[in-house]
Length: 190
Image (cartoon, rainbow, N blue to C red):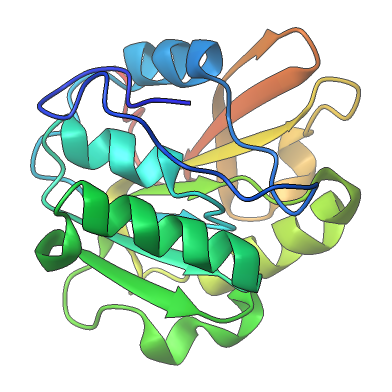
């Protein structure tokens, strides 16, 4: 696994052994960031961060800061190793907690512009509920984007998301990525 593009392009990322994480493949990350376009100066929140590959890719492409939320010890160890090896400590915050308990430790004052949600697929339904509950208007900028990675066999219906509007969805093999915007926001990808 590696960083795809940007100032850290081609640098290697470590992942824990076993099934604690299911890192986003290079192919999916490359396609996702092509869909997102310019992420320069955006503040990123990487939920269920695992190795941190999504947030690290955003930083490599010019994001100003990334906050990673992860609860599993092996994944946290790999994430911290990746951040140290890539010298990203000053641009990052690591929150070692479950997503539903992370709110108090997220960055105050400036909302996130880009949120990645890549939960364990067997916990998808609960994870989505926790993510949608967490992302209140004070945590997500009005033009923010929520990116959810999920299995293709479980498409996310727009009606199931409350105040969120499905903007775009794409799939590669068994992986699907759905992009959401707050209901009142303009299309962030337009």
